[in-house]
Amino acid sequence: MSRWILRRLLQGVITLAVVMVLLFLLMRLTPGDPLGGIAGDRLMSPEEMQLLRARYGLDQPILQQFMTFARGAVQGDFGTSIHRYPDRVGPLIRDRLPASILLGGTVLLLNFTIGIGLGVLQAVHRGSRFDRWLTRISLAAWALPSFWLGLVLIAVFSLTLGLFPAGQMQDPLLPADAGPLTRLVDLLHHLALPALTLSAVSLAAGMRFQRTAMLEVLRLDFVRAARARGLPERRVIWVHAWRNALSPVVTLLGLWLPMLVAGSIYVESIFNWPGLGSLAAEAISGRDYPLLLGTAMLTSVLVVAGGVIADLGYLLVDPRVRDS
Amino acid sequence: MRGPLAEVLRGAWRSPSGRWGLVTLLVIAALALAGPLVLNDPAAMPDVMAGAESPSLAHPLGTDALSRDVLSRTIHGARVSLGIAMLAVCLAMLLGTTIGAASGYRGGWIDTVIMRTVDAGLAIPRLLVLLLLVLVWERIPTMALAVVIGSTGWLGTCRMVRGEVLRLRQMEFVRAAQALGASSGRIILRHLIPNAAGPVAVSATLGVADVILLEAGLSFLGMGVQPPTPSWGGMILDARPVLLSAPWTSLAPGLAILVTVLAVNLVGDALQRALDPRSA
Image 1: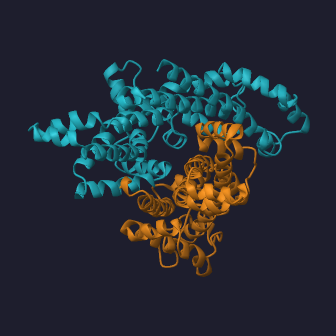
Image 2: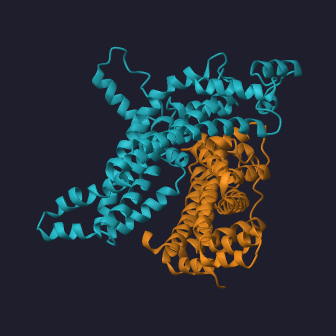
Image 3: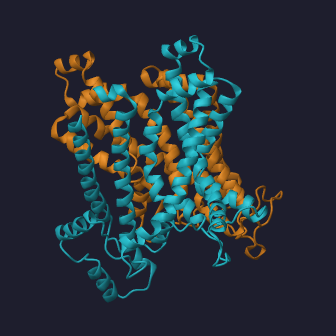
């Protein structure tokens, strides 16, 4: 089995190496070079353009450019930002991580508790009015553009009702000597709307996966046997059945890992949440390709890691996988 | 109509939610095709200084901050959005099906290389790939946008079709065709792809929903459909400063996205259930 784990890890590393090649090619496939968009945006003399190309190494032979890119990428170094020159991409990203992890962690917590719980209840009450309506609502939630939902929530809950702040992570008027409790309440107050927006559009996936997995388990004989032994229904469902329907939790853990760290470009930029997503949005308007490349590489690492973690997780929750 | 695809389509039509989705989509398509013939010019700004006006008889959904008719722009937006979605998904399905089928049928090192590349491609979030591709354009033409979106959407289909081909390749009717001396191209086109048509239809439908949301998102970020061409995402971007004073300017395009994507998803869901009754 340890051989299998090793092979899976190696596979992840190979995938990431190919990701690196793809990202580099992506920048070179496009007509002109990555600075093409900037040339149209700003007034620049050909000499200035030449200088900029030299600064980003775009005048070098292509193979050498790739070597420079690959060597940097392996060390997590994506060079210098264009939009925020002379800051480097690595530290820029690192500074934004905590805010994104806070938002993503909250969303994951909501999704795993509420989403999974509702999915189990749906399966137990299959075909009931509750199940049918929840299925409809989750289909509608799938179709919601998060940026629009965010704006609607801002319009209703902060601009009209004044219940929540419309953006930022902290009240700028918070006194400097505010106690930790006041700070925490203020933080949660700012966290509520962006977390709600992101959760509303992603929670449905958890519900659906869990409903399907639970339905399959509830059909099995051992559930009937547990009921026949006279065990309380709550125990049958949550202890006996659910323990055998944990695979969606593992799948989603892998699937949602990128969301935990990388944040959402739309939601973070709408709520001015100082995370990676709003950094990426800045990079877009500043046509800052090194910064976007860094963000893309980090997210891809998380996607691949999520896949590996999910595969290892199946080993833990499903004995059949463990033995094969 | 006969064959596996027709069966799946019939199955989708039999489910009430699938029928709702299809009918809604047909209505939206009809509006997108016929609407522009009777509606105001979406680019006309009769009274720029007046600002956004609330809904009235002349403008059933009101006007935006530049006094353009919101109803007309929403319906023109449907044209743009659905047009891009159809073009992009056709391209993606064409690429995904041919590459996936060829890769699975050929096998060997070519298959390994292609599938490793697909795995890696799927690891990069599509939105970021699109942003990196679009970044080099000063103003991306709508047609180029559709092609770029389509060329990033084939990876999942490719993997799925390859899996189907690997399964079908072992079946007797394929063996028989091989024994009769049919060429690889003929076997792939006449025997393998038609039998994978059901799953491809599902992935095309779900692909349309993805593309509509992606295009709206890109346009909202200012990197998609360029003004003055009306697009739902772009309209929401324009509506941001007047969120409270003129809510109709953001409600119309937002609800348009919601209803369209929901309808597409209902159809996709029904197709999937028709294909695999166990998943219901």
